[in-house]
Length: 346
Image 1 (cartoon, rainbow, N blue to C red):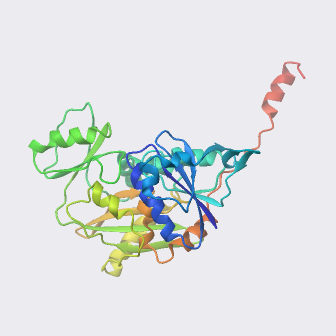
Image 2: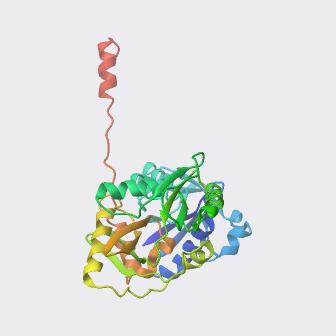
Image 3: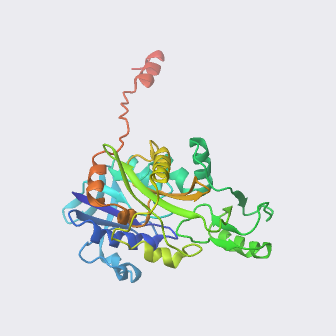
């Protein structure tokens, strides 16, 4: 199968997307990979899979590659004999953050009738925004961590006890995230977060809480990963997550009992189906006093969370043949014709 990997984008997570894309070369050993890079100006470039490395992008050398245009049915490059379509079977959206996770890519691929693996528009909009994710979880009967929401021009006061975590609403990879241990630290943490976003959510920092990650998708049945218990410090900062996104070898399953395993998996299924059909997502859960709480939905996880699956590549191929399709709408201008006839016009 020929898989096009779309990566880069106009995003604070642009470089993480590059790391994820390069990692896929080690993971997808039985597939043909077609790399399509989106630069910070949102131009498309066809990247030679044999020459791809991080320096290609940091040096600007990628601009020597063929530039592409997005048209109905796919990506096209201009040549001596006219426009030629880039051949691939399915596109994997690997743009982290803005452009990839906010619904722009999903909208473009849908509009131009390109088969793609990624959350669709509605799923992207709800999972990209941490506040909307809370609303989604509440509507599904899924519990989340308590929170408060502040906008940039709001009064900087909160009612919950310290310590707390301050998070920009529309960012991942721990960018702009701070642990605040006293009221004296709140103002600075908000300044940092508001550098990246106009809205933040504030959650209690739960000491010693257990965290578990579950990834998966639905093809002709459920394909769920192992449940991972990430080993980390207070939280993973940007640098640690940057390195974490390059993982390409399977990790060990969490040592938890069958009851908790079932709780986590059933909660994941409730979140995934039907909104996230056509995508591989990872949900991060907290477990506190036996309760499973949704922490975050990762609609395009780093390196697609390949390290949590025994047969990631096979699953990707299966998902490519079970993608949701838009209904075809026929337009025959009957209404306009009837108006014209009523007016006595042919």
